Length: 68
Image (cartoon, rainbow, N blue to C red):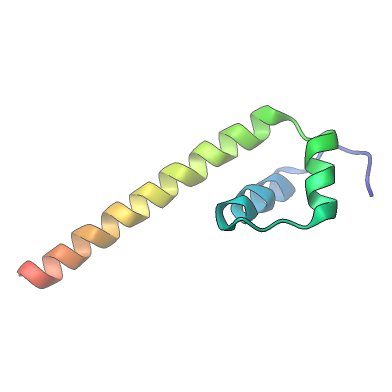
């Protein structure tokens, strides 16, 4: 296991895994031991906004297709 702060890509993958409720134990240990909370919060907020935008667009498209 590395003693370094997780990279942005590793933080992104950890946050994405948390959306699905899955995470490898080694990654969880790395995140809690060496991760900076600010990285996880910022990336988590960005991914949440992207998710909300995608759901909004999917609903708009579905309504447009069904209502004409």
